Amino acid sequence: MTDRWEEKIFRMAEQEQIVMPRKMSDRIENVLCKLEHMGQYTGEYAEGDIEDQYVQERKGRRHAPKEGKAVRFRMNWKKSIVLAAALVMLVSATAAASVGALRERMEAMNREKIEQYFAQIYANRVGHDNYNRPYLATEKERMKELRGSYESQTLFPDGELTMIDRAEDYKGRGVAFLGNTATFFFPEKEMSDEELLQIIDFMYKRDYSLQKMNEMIQEGEARMPDFEEEIQATEEEILNTDAVYEPAQALTIPYTGELELDLTIAAGRNEIFLAGFNAVHRMKTGSSESELFFDDFGAETRILAMCQDKNGDLYLALWQWADGNDPESNRLALWVVDAQGELLRKIDMAQYLSPEKQGYTRRMALDDDYLYLSVAGLENQKKNQECEILVLDREGNYVSRIAPDEYELNSLGGLGLGRDGRVYTQIEKFYDPDEPDRGMGIASLDGEKGELGDIYFDIMPEGTIMIDIIAPGAESDFVFWGYDGIFAYDPGDEKAEMILPAYEAPCSWEGARYCALPDGRILFASASEYRSEETPLGKRFYAVPEKTCFYYVPGVRAE
Image 1 (spheres, rainbow, N blue to C red):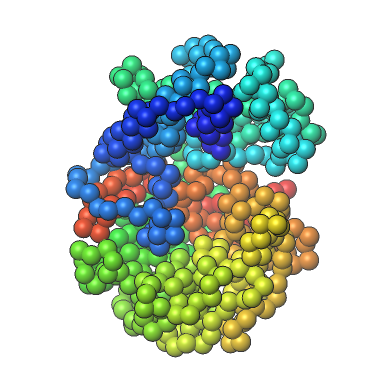
Image 2 (cartoon, helix red, strand yellow):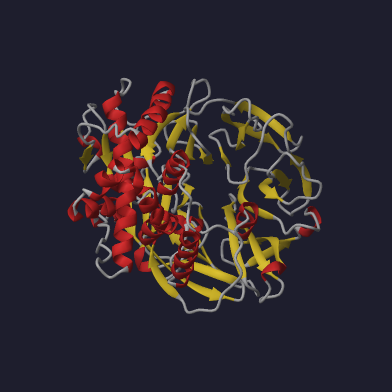
């Protein structure tokens, strides 16, 4: 939810010159501490999106291990607690309530209405707001002005936006909201002041309801909703046929295996590899069960990335802890396991890394000749690059490094094969405060020369944040997973085409593990519940197997 109550209240307090009392900050601190000890966590673990140590370091959010027992929690509980922790500043809502009419408007909502808003947040499987189209520039300007009038001049809408149950229920008139994917639907034409005010009003009521319900839950006056997302599994008559291999066939398969998923999944040849702590499982395409593939690591191990070559050998980028009790002793390693699950070789990564850094990778890809790894922490890495692409041969010998001067690479921005068999990566302009539009595209990699090859730039629709897992599509040269949806692209097209918006996805978008299948489908592994436990290496989160489901999404353009 991008418009948080604390931001609104501070803005209003500034206008009214309200002094925030010291006891308010003390209460906030107290609540945050209570929530942490209850096993509820803030946005660092949004929807089970468990961030690795490197990302936590970059964001300044590393945590010291604490003593405690393992706990289980629903990912959707986080959604209510996250904002509640910050929104308990609605002590500040009460502090700012002296603005009168707005407070009365919020408090006029009956309990049924408050619970309705709260249930929408709790059931939301996305974790952030989505939009069927971006705001127009003129709408943004008017929205800013209207928000000020809403807060300080009691300019309220005459009506309310429409709540819908399915995306197809929106008929293009007025503004509407789809709760389970937190999606706002706007008309194609520029919105009126009334429609913009309805959006502002909705956001205020939603945030107020979140705060109010959490207060009642803490006081024992209300209970968390008993919500369980219903999963419509694919019929057995489809799963028992070759239809599971059809590029246009969507599948929903509840997991019946035993592995507690961690960071990554990867596609092989008609098989899927699943990573847990200290273990890799293998699962046939279309299956619901997995079997142990490899676990002979000899030390505490976390698998960061995987890819399989044409011979069936599986390349594993992983962290291992030299001292099993010291979180600072981890090191990046690269192992190769054959198709039978036997260790072939270990590739020494220390020779390529800066001694001051542990090294990190989340993306790797193979072409006919070379292995490409997107690595942060390389020796003499360019200061303006978040990562560089290290190119090795199959034995782990150095071939080249790719770090273009004119484009920025992203450690989470994807590596993958195009239909032409070459490896591609995401590129964008370096950040310039005077030019916020950075553009985004893809480029092929010339491993032998250590440079970019063909470049397709500024191909993503406006507002796209990131693209990933570049793959050949069944009906297009490329399919991308993006923060905003799934896209298809052919060289020569002006822009990539969104073929599945995030709000129409069958599962959680941000929290899911995902990979691209050779047939162009995108595979998601999503868990609705996680358990956590304290270890000498810090808090660990495990996807509960019986709450995990696999979703095969066709990467084809809609008719």
